[in-house]
Length: 332
Ligand code: KG4
Ligand code: ZN
Image (cartoon, rainbow, N blue to C red; front, side):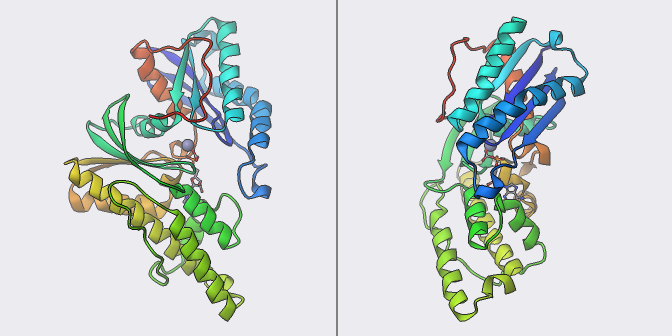
């Protein structure tokens, strides 16, 4: 039963986790704050921050887990998809430490890891369908086995997280706007405003039209009342959030019914959204489908999800060569 150190550095969170026998002993997440002032992730600043934080993050994970680095059996890292400069830091660090300790390396696909976050404290059965919603991706995935996944639907333009973040920007909220919209929506009326929903066939999503529809609506209303956004902020947040959740769950329902599936899972940063979590559970109850949602700390980017994939790869002897390179694009 392996003890694995996993490193995640695909975007703007530096994270390290220790996994022993498939159990997470530590999961340290160092969220970079430098991007807030810029209204989005600045790739070069992200690489530099990973460089600065990676040693303390890994060191803290090892110390908190109670293991010694000599106890490790392998080192895992996110190979992609993600920002290439950010990935390079994690991959290079894993190689350096792996070389020094004489350990094998395990490369992990970040999107597969989001799906596997549901296997940390739960045991979903197969096949099930997972909706992965993050800042960079929106995917409907048919999960046939622990490492056997088929992408059956995805966004044609913006990701669900981007829809939250770009809407928040239009409302003058700071980055990342998703959690802010969630908070402000708590005391808003979700049925006050209606926004256009996309008409895309099949299991694919589109969110760019929603952003345009919100922009035109706000522009028109602000002409009538310059304080429109300020006066209606909570209702706007609740209505935008409801529209995004409606779009996400309609397609998910369609895919689950057509594939005769009875078990659903949620993953990715946007699965931290309280409305989405609530409505996802209701959807399961109404249809008698079993549901899985990761704990909050395993929804947004984290190394525990990288570690759990690595655990299953270790059991299958799936190691990679030391000349492995990161991949900015990495399909499931
Ligand atoms: O998975 P993640 O941490 O990073 C990526 O791989 O992209 O997802 C980040 C995204 C951001 O767009 C953020 O606004 C969104 O997840 N997010 C939320 C909430 N918490 C995070 N969106 C809506 N409501 C939330 N509570
Ligand atoms: Zn992610």
